[in-house]
Image: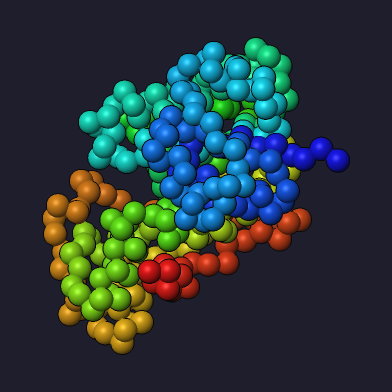
Amino acid sequence: MKKTRSLIIGSGVIGAYLSKLLLKKKHEIVVTSRSKKKIFKNYKKLKISKKVFFKKLNVLKKKEITKLLQNIRPDNIFYMAGQSSIPKSYILKKDTINSNFIGAKNFLEILHQKKYKTKFFKANSGYIFKPKNGKINLNCKLIKPSNPYVYAQQKTYKFIKQFRQKKINCYNLLFMQIESPLRENSFLIKKVCLHAKKKKKVVVGNINTVRDYSWIEDIVNGIYYISFLKPCDLILSSGKRLSGKQILDFAYSFKKLNYKDYYSEDKKFFRKNETKIVIGSNSFTKQKLKKFNWFPKIHGKKLVKKIYDSL
């Protein structure tokens, strides 16, 4: 019986965890990256680097993409690449647009030209939408782009929809914050947990903002189940509220400390015109994935404890 072959574009955290899951599902995995130096890092940490095939690929060169697709003929393409830092997007404007939009555009155009039936999944940000009453769903309007990252993500989101009309099997996967032990130490939950574990004070931004933090394994499970659906757009998130204040409280409580004695706020971590509450609505996603019994299991205090215990 032929194994399902999945191509993962980008060697980041989500792609690494997705690879780990797909290997358990007996997929053959090919991972591409433009950088030889970073390509193994996350896969080594998950102890799966010897179980996947690595290829160097420049997503801006159609000839390279065409040759790769002809050689491996993937059943699924998971496009997880792209410069994802909003502050960096102002400095790396061209790279942000190229990696998030142009690369995905190239893949879609080749799939259309070659009439491939390959399923194409594009990672995208739920923050491209304007929240209504603090919640984001697929009926929300797109926000006015205020940075190159959101601009690139919105263009890709629209492009996926256009190519779906051309009978290309393409999907928008919309994420909020996704947490894992592989995240950089500067990410809020990991940063707070590192300081709490050492009983040190931490400097943070506005602790009253409320966001939607989800656990990586919940998300990649959702991605896997979506691969059995017809092309669509879906929000993958915890759907739960978690404030900066709660993160501090949970993390320091594991050491039986009062967080109020262990933090200070710095305006440099505040974002201009920041919305106080932004939560992803996953009710439609849970409905679509009902037959797989998918729902986020790790959130809130459990999620903070997962990060804390991983350190």
